[in-house]
Image (cartoon, rainbow, N blue to C red; front, side, top):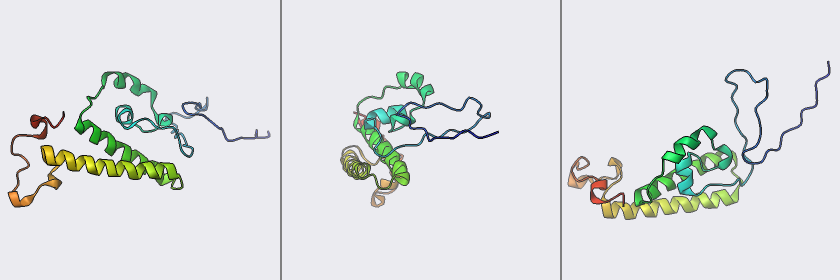
Length: 150
């Protein structure tokens, strides 16, 4: 029996199918093209991925119930999430100059935002403590009690 010619599939974002005869628990990893469409940082944090092509359909129900408030802390979380996602993308697409530029700008924004947040509300984690003041991490009030989420 002659094997049919297999041509590589060219799928748009959100398209493509699994083989009809795939084995149980057959892993499927969508391949990203260069410069893929991206969610905004906030959408990415709520969706669980920066890239719509990697968005998992079963998360739609969770996303509908997980509306994060627009706060300084949530913006920092979104920036950190986008930095991590772009870092993973650049591991496999190191020549994507647009993504590299976005990565650098998000790192800069996150650093600036973290400095402003820390100056106003205190350290975000124990690694940012000023130890000359002693170990004050567990002393009240916590950042959200000072309005750090606002």
